[in-house]
Image (cartoon, rainbow, N blue to C red; front, top):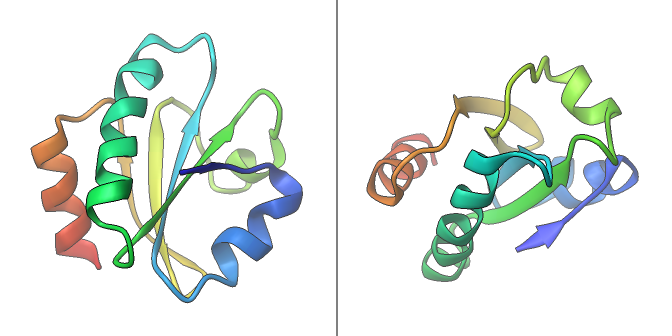
Length: 104
């Protein structure tokens, strides 16, 4: 699971051949910290099906602003460079896997 910044967004997300789940987070966000190990597990379990990246909204404010991110954690799934689904808030692992599978 990569942590990317605004400059890496195009290469890592928009140009990816694999669907990408991008998690917008902040170090100070409690629910974000709870979600991180869940996303790490999903990243390993679903390797090859979806790529999971994280972006710190404090270090890279441009990308979250461009997608209207107002609350964190916000997860957006991108397919063929386009945002196709959004989920806001910490979510149990089973619900996340179900959401990912329903979208990709």
